[in-house]
Length: 261
Image 1 (cartoon, helix red, strand yellow):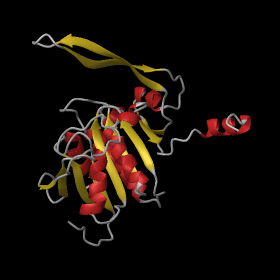
Image 2: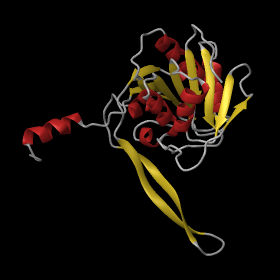
Image 3: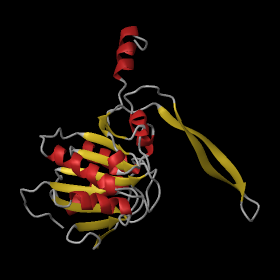
Image 4: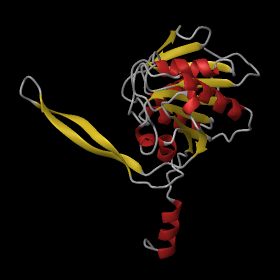
């Protein structure tokens, strides 16, 4: 399972849509000649899992032949489990870069909190591995990833040429339009936008109630520097993300007011 010593960058690829999804196939295709690529991904869809890890049950791995000469493993765990297993049991070292995606659907604004795609990338960042999560704003299985492959390759090629902060973490969202309609790449902040959620109450054939989560996406942020603003105008959004959730402004306010002194 060990990766041979090489001067090529070692690129770990993972996702949350499962190892057979079109998104991860297109991600591998975009970067397979940029380094030594190793795929470790879930064996079933894990969307919305966030930063969940498996504690109460064993994890299993199976080697797969899905990407030609690219080494690939499927696991029974979550996206975060995949990153942990890759580093400890497959690579036996930290990769030079971790790529997660390409997700089927948006991971802009509040979605970053729930996203298995971004949580896998965040886990890598926590472990000191520069990482990027990629998402295409198209939930369809048959989505066209042509432009996404180009965008991924462009971003990863540029990143690999730089000396990277080991905690680098980027959330990249790509509009679902042809390449000639993409206006460019914008570095953005996360918009204050979320889903106005509701649980649709239904009744099953046995007369028992069950609930189906529904919701409408609402953008409360009128700024012109947000990921939602950029994507609505056919720009690729790049949001630098961090796992330090400290509110430093509020921290200073609490220290100044001595509320807890």
